[in-house]
Length: 559
View 1 (tube, rainbow, N blue to C red):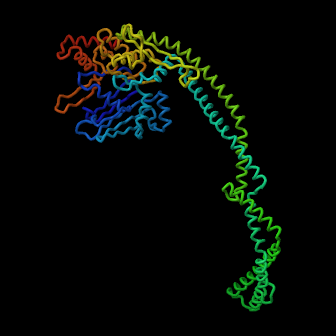
View 2 (cartoon, helix red, strand yellow):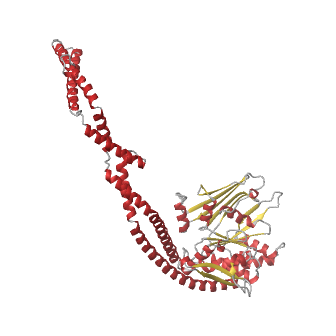
């Protein structure tokens, strides 16, 4: 529901704030007073294209804001939650804002956060429906017509199930197609992988093998040189009377003979003792290493051959020799995956076939439900159109059957609302057959018939009363009032018979000053009677027209 509209520096409005109520609100004013400015502003807030010409003369920018209540509007709340655009402090409210700059740029906001115009248009579909000759005629869109029919027939849940089933089937078909193409391309791939795996299995590379082989090769290749250097080192450490270990022992013995416990002397003794122990341990380690330096030409040749084989295979795959074991595991895993592809294809094909049968069964039930609902809707809407002065009108909820292979999220048919406004003319699409005024009345008739099931909480009608008067005008007013019991209705009207029946009456006025300004006021009961008298009497309002206006309000209050 639309709670409030704030307009600043837009067209002829410098600053304007309008509060709206639930029910039916009539908007009236003299010709040229600017009744459509409010609707134009609302249209921009809801995503219409902007122009710098719409900014009030002398102002740098225009600022437009609309507050909606989304309490009970599940679709709008879900949309906001999915995009994290809800207001945590007031989750039941939604604030839409649009700013226009003199440079032609505009910005849109939802609850203070910038969004795209497409985002705004998507959200607006859950909040409000505007019907006029130039704005937001959502009723002309087939998907909206289909949704209205499904809601009216009480099978919207079945329609959602069909859409879900279609999505599931399409996903299975897509996955199956991808897998089949992969299998076709995979036959050559499997042959290549099998060959590569055989090569790797013949070599049997180990993850840590290459590094160990390199170390062994270095040791064996330089065994003689290492042995000579090692012998010299061992001699210097322990195998000569002037060896390091012996000298350290003698030096330590000399210090221990000094009878003095000075800290510096004690520290020196400890360091020399540690040095002798380290020298002894180094000697032991070097002797253990010396045992490994036995020349082994056969082992060296074997290692050369093994390293060469690892290098050759690694070069073939353009990887390091150390990665051969990992490559073998990867190839084996891919082969296992490809081996199960054909079996998986068969399983997916069976699932897709079952999903299609389920989809067609659900779509068939939906078709039957739509046919029954369409017949009821046609009769009911046509009857309302006759009441609205379209005596020869004929409304049709046409179902265009589709082939089974064309079954989609919308089922096995396309829904299209058609109408004939004149006798002897076959019904055609709403946008091609109906004029602006007729479209408003057709929309009104459809909304009245579907009010109890409609998902749109607010409806705006512009020029719904064009070309009618007298008794039909009162019928329009009563229909709008009746519709207002289920949804919020805002209607721009020129007819006192319609305005008299509104729950709320807003009057638009334009000042006579040099710089014309537009204002909108919510009328009191006394002011309503005066406005109705103006609408009835024109330039000169007599006591008789005032009495007539008062009588109209009295009848409306008792309606």
